[in-house]
Length: 335
Image (tube, rainbow, N blue to C red; front, side, top):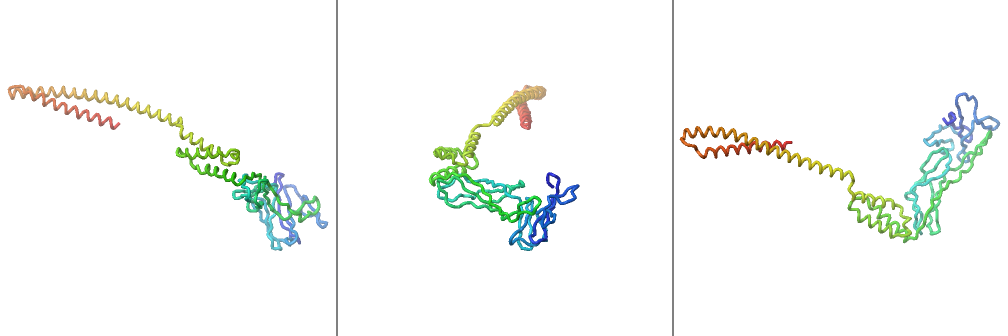
């Protein structure tokens, strides 16, 4: 269905030429629109009429692809493709700097045909390019697409004019042809740049070498096709050499964390020392009291104070204090 709401129906005509005709229809249509008068009769308009060796009766069904091209055959045995006209050719990845004495290098070239129905079709394998050696006087190369044989030319109200030859479609690629030595110098610099690969801190010497080679080209610098990659590599290297603000922030946070841990550790150390001291005093007090009782009993039994009793009690007190201190230290490490 087109923008006016019409549905188009295409069919082959089982007549001597085997033409493709069509009718367009929508609600309210009761007669053939855009009719042609053929041999005095009102006939559905024709889209394409085979001529010469391709003309024959046809009863085969038509097949259409996603680009609107219709494929069909008739009793001639030919398989034909009827499609939209080509408005222009467009190219991609075309080389614009060439070497004197060599043919144009089309190894990376892609060519597309832009059809009148808006379709863009890859026709790279069907174009021809002049393969003669280039000279310093050449400033363009021609790309040619010989896409068709013939077509119908519509006549309002009358039969089409058939067998109208289709002219090849051409486009040109503007080029600069350099002397062989200059061309090789430019390509050498382009290779230095393309060989940089992934940029790391170890790439610095290679980047400097590429920049020096590029600067040494002088007036030939404008022909280096990947200089943007060199500029990007230099920018990336500077970024790698300069600490990011996020890294500085992380370092700041880390320093604060260390300071906090030191403060906590210091506080824990003081608490531990205080607890140890308190525990030692408590134990010392309790054990001293017990020791005093023991000493009194010993004195009663021995008849005199034993000076070693105090020393023995002192060893026990010290031992208990160390155990308590050790327990506190383990507890702090578990945190």
